Amino acid sequence: MTQRSKNKSNFKKGSVEMLLLHLLKTEGDCYGYQLSQLINQRSNGVLVIPEGSMYPTLYKLIDNNYITDYKKVVGKRMTRVYYHLEESGKERLNELVEDYKEVADAIQKIMSFEGGSEAEDSAN
Image 1 (cartoon, one colour):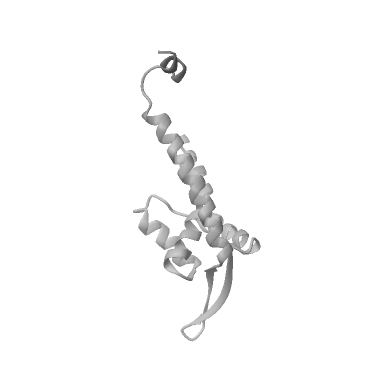
Image 2: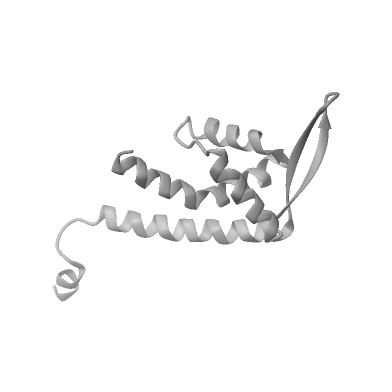
């Protein structure tokens, strides 16, 4: 794995919780495979969430009472586990989005800064 791939992987791991909560808010109740496919499709294949990352995150969200799960029979024999966003999950999503925006804004400020140091600029 290249360094770039490792960095992208670390970034994605920290974002999985926020993405799952967002999808449950915008799409309504979903099952696991459906969530992973939505992430893949909406990111044009850039974000692929492996089951090894997604399901532990879903279980953590359940343990923290941000989401609940229930089983639903599909067809004659198949049962799917659906996930439902709770009010506390909406609040958690708002916190995560605010944190994300703050970090993204700070990164943008650093990336767009050109020239001398701010200490030099404020001295002039």
